[in-house]
Length: 290
Image 1 (cartoon, rainbow, N blue to C red):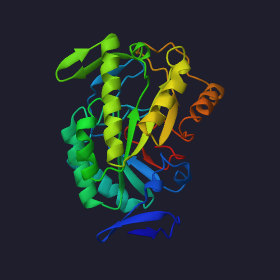
Image 2: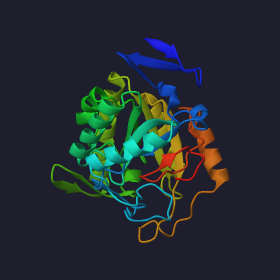
Image 3: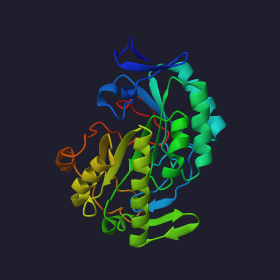
Image 4: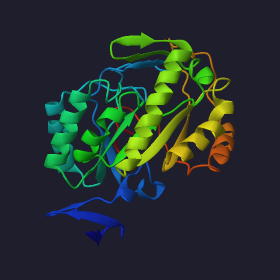
């Protein structure tokens, strides 16, 4: 059954005695929701199964605002206690997300335990995860059955020759792959995951980190593939040069270049224009700090 939200006029989903936020109240997927609805990221995922040449996961960092950064890692029980305190103090949170600082499905037990607990305690809230997609396919049903509504998959290449320049390793089933083989494996797993996500009618966003001289000329191909996969929206993110990474000396794409690439990509799939490159422990409105 669908109702109208008195606050926004948007459709809301009623299941049993609970009225759940509408999918369009996710502030990252819908720019129209970003000024009135906030998100909270629970940093319960410490480990990652791939290494990207632009990434340095500094856990204990209060001053940097970028993905893969958090003040601390929370255990699922700690995350629930924190969430309870947060929801006692504010009413503008529509979605709970798990976006790091590692990959939520590298250690799926922590993520699934957290998601299950959140959905049981706060069934009105939307749930999302952000993942590289390597382990996603086998957990799509678990995620959907535990209330996840939105999934973001980071896809930085759909050509292994491009991907091998971005990923220094991909680890699966206790085996580590490098070079073209690693990029081929990741792409195949992402493609499998996308097919399963759409069979469960989950909202899907593709995140693409734009890396000058590496994949900037590849954005149209990624967008076209995202459309073929049935992605609902795409988010082109300018790479932040991070110290002590292989790409630390590359320049960040400027606003004009990002606008040009988003315009090209929009021919294939709707674009997100309001991304704030959130930390793994971000909270609040996208237009606010945190």
